Each structure stands twice: as C-alpha cells, then as structure tokens.
Length: 352
Ligand code: ATP
Image (cartoon, rainbow, N blue to C red; front, side, top):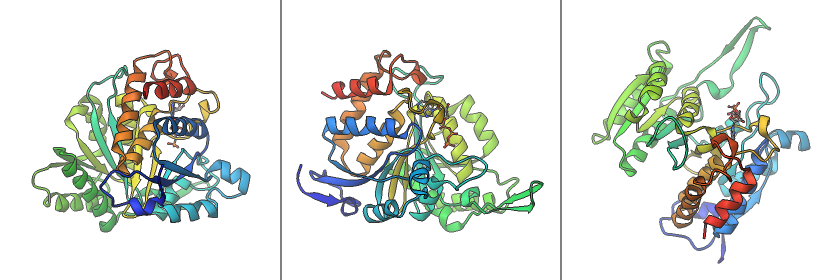
C-alpha cells in the first residue's frame, strides 16, 4: 500500500493519504487485548492504511518489566507522536500512579475530547443525543500532589488551574464548535465554592467566548449540570470543563447513549495525539469474550479522521451501525447475546 511514512509527517495534511501511517499501539490491561484484537482485525479487513508499532504499558508492563511506562514505549511515542492506547489499570488506593495521567501530562495532550452520540438500534433512555465533552487533561486535581499531614488521619490534595492550560482547552472547544458548526459551548465549574481555581477557569471561559460571537456561551455549576444532563440532555452541545468534572460527567454522558461500551475519546495536544476509550480496563469481564469493542473502535475512527482517512472511517462506522441491528452478534452490555468475537466478525462481513 505505497510508501511508509511516519505519522508525524501527516499531522497537518489535508488531503487523503495513500500511504501507511505508523501508529503506536498499546493494547493495555484487562479487556484491552480483546478490544485491540477487534480493532486490528476490522482495520485489516477494511484496508485501513495503518502500520501498528506495538508497545506495552500499564499493569501488564509493570508485571512483565517492572515498569508501568517502559522507556521503549516512551521512545516510540516520542518518535511517532500518535497512538491508539487500550485501557491501563491503575491500582486503587496504593501502588503506581496512573500511566494514563502521566502520558497526558508528558505529551501535553491538553484536550480530552469525548463525544457521546446516540447510535442506531441501541435501546437507551434517550434518542438523538449528540454531545461533545472537552475535559482539561493536564492539571486540576489530577496532578497527583497529595500528602499525609498526619498519617492515616489527615490527607491533602492540591488542585492546580492555570490560565494557560484553561485557555488551551476552552479555545479548543470553541474551535471545534466553529469547525463542526455547533451552536453552543457550556462551561462547567464549581466557582461558588472553589473561587480561585474554578473562578479562574470560568473567567478564562468568558474571555475566550468573546472571540466567538456566533457561538452561544453559558456557564453552569457542576452539580446542577449533573441534574440537567439527566433531565434534559438535548439542551447541550459542546461542553468544556476541568479534569475531574470531565471524568465524571463523561461517564454520565456515556450512560445517556447506552453505556461505557459506546464512547470513544481522543487526547489531543499541539504535537501529539493519543486515542483511547472512555472506559477503563473492566477487570470484571476481562478474558471472557464479553467486552464491547465499539468504544475502542470509535476512538480508532477518531484516529482515522485525525489522519484525514475519512473514507475508511465512514465505511467502518456504517458497518458498525449495520451490525447493531443484529442483537445475536452484539455484546451483552448493549442487550446482545453475542461476544467480542462475533461482533468483530459481523462488522468485517458488513464492511463489504
Ligand atoms: P477507570 O477508573 O479506569 O475509568 P472504572 O473503574 O471507571 O475504570 P471501567 O473499567 O470503565 O471502570 O468499568 C466500569 C463498568 O463498565 C464495569 O462494570 C465494566 O465491566 C463495564 N465496562 C467498561 N467497559 C466496557 C466494555 N467495553 N464493554 C462492556 N462493559 C464495559
């Protein structure tokens, strides 16, 4: 399929490419290897012009190599700058800190873009949901600055909000809204209580919004937002918020469209992009051939669109939609009687 080029060469291309893109692939932990197999099988069948450069990270890497983020993985990410990353397990309460968070910080992927869009044949509580969440990805409560003031009795955690990072993610949300002809940006905060940190985030939102007079702008307190999203999600379009609120509200948004098995995500910075599902490593169903690969597939389609490979992305999306009509091949989380493998096989046959 033509010459091999590095993905960095393609970051700013606008024309359809006919060569192979070198993309780092990290299968990850838990259900990661199963959903990765689904994506690579479907991409092969569709003739997607991707050359996967496989590396490890997370719990698997920690157990096998004693390092959850091995040097060779970092080197590959540094070289190629674009990756598809499976879910990585972060031990709860103790153990090593999140590799997902470390990668977002290291590669300054300041926007975590998480669309939640209704899909055909999915029996969910709402129809026609079409939201896109922009989650600030490099700071907030996720910087990992925690300490014991008094061991086992008093712990403290620091949240950092800077004008620079806030402006980057808010501007990215407005740019996206403008490019995709979206009507409204909603900024979510808790500035009534967190007056300095969320106050700054909100102030930046107001300033940036003035550069986009054609896009409606509003802000809302996070607790009210949680209720509003459940009561009347159709009032929202593009949402931008801080790191922790974005984490929580994007799982809520996944719930609106049928669950975590259906929402993809992209971590985008100025010179790096890491695509992943919104969901975690789902250890409760790992190795059981039950994982829904759609979320990771949607992340992979975001990757193809980032590479301007829209034709193949559209073909795969259509095949997913066709496949959803047959519940006998779909995974149990969306009401099916099938498996990860049966879904993958059906998408492959629906590609033609
Ligand atoms: P993290 O903190 O890493 O985001 P989490 O603790 O929120 O992870 P997940 O791993 O996302 O948890 O799983 C939450 C629930 O959703 C689990 O019951 C899991 O089985 C289910 N789930 C997640 N992803 C999928 C999927 N792709 N297919 C089916 N079920 C899934």
